[in-house]
Amino acid sequence: MRSNLRVLGLVMAGGEGRRLAPLTEERSKPAVPFGGSYRIVDFVLSNLLNSGIYSIFVLVQYRSQSLIHHLREGWRLSTPHPDDFLTVVPPQMRVGKVWYRGTADAVYQNFNLISDYRPDLIAVFGADHIYRMDIGHMIRFHRKKEAHLSVAMLPVPSGEASGFGVAEATPDDRVVAWLEKPESPPEMPDRPGFSYSSMGNYIFEPGALVRVLKEVEAEGLDPDFGNTIVPRMVEDPDYKVYAYDFHRNLVPGIKPYEEAGYWRDVGTLPAYWSAHMDLLGKRPRFDLNNRLWPIHSQSYNRASPRVLSGQLEDVSIGVGSVVDEARIVRSVVGRDVWVERGAEIVDSVVMDHCRVGHDARIHRGIVDRYNYIQPGEVIAVGEPTQREGTREEEGLIAIRRGRTRPL
Image (spheres, helix red, strand yellow):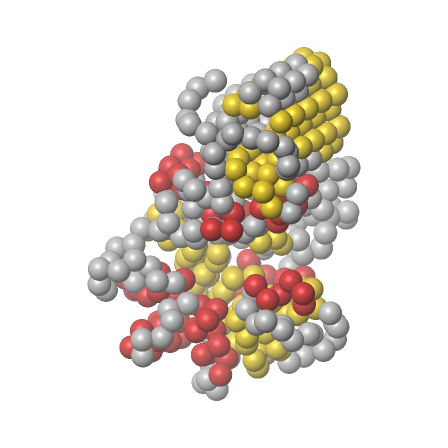
């Protein structure tokens, strides 16, 4: 539903994603496929559109061609309203011949987008996470608190919180202290063992954001939201910074068995694999089948998947795929994948346009697009392989993207 507020969405989609290599060797992290039918960026964009935010700039940088192609093919906003757009913005170098030096610098270098649009609020959201969120709830919270900045937060086990910004907040949600990626994250007073961690999603008053960004640039400080902008505003009594508890967010269509406040940073191979496993089972932690809050993506005109014969147990299979006398267990198989007789895929993710030869075996593998697994080949940790571009981590093996070619 369209809001009377002019809300401008700025999506930070320039992430390099080094920890997700080899999946990010030829694409940025937001462009990495997920769930058999999507790209990671589709989740933030769907949240914005489903929340009635139709004015969106996607700021890209690192190896952006794959992402740009996906957005061009899958995200065309065709409406007569002049404020309905989704526009990709590479580095424009308006303030000097430099690339984006951080998340905040990406916004600073594109002040013209803000001045031209004249928004009432700015939603600065990351493009690297898997979740559903009604951003309208956060906007109402922000306006009720009369905040200059609201930060989406959620409790994270303290042992895992050192990779996030961590806040200390009063009972009325006012942020009084901020630590960016602390070695020893402080625990929440009312929830021992957990730390209040940032999701990397922000609602700003435009004037406050522009003012602080100009100050940071003039002082030559690190142009990053978590490292500089947020702590600076927290420490300045002229600004009111509030923590929005993501667990309060209510999204239509969520099933009773789903994990409340599901949100995953899929920035490592184990996290990426684990999030795929969360899609499976009779009662998945994150159920992609939600008609009231759909995840949009590029349309793909292929026939329904065909299973000629074989053993399938707890499997997601994309359109256009064919299974011929194979065994697939607890795995996510993408679109246009051919699995030949005698092949076995267990606890794995196989992306689009792959072919798994007869009697091949994939165990706890992440196989990027366009790969051909040779007949009898074994993809598993500890098994000998002559493939280049593979990586093993925590009992998983990942294979980089193959050469683009039709099946």
